[in-house]
Image: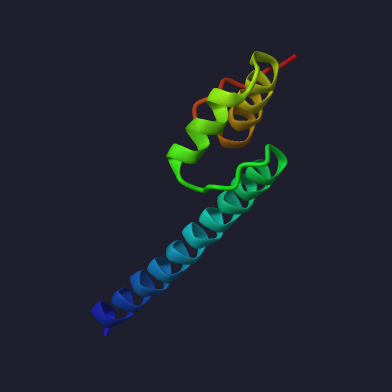
Length: 83
């Protein structure tokens, strides 16, 4: 009995983990789609993205770079400001 309930608990945890991962992937995809639309990037491949970056001026490139850093920065290892 004990082993059976343990397997059920691990199964439920696995399903919840997969659902959370799918949600996070969906959110990131929506963010990237918004950025692509904002900068008028039609092709969704890395090559199309690189071609559009080559066409940008320095100011617009810095703006795009800042947005990407803001949206996709890892939050796990940042030091907290305690001011």
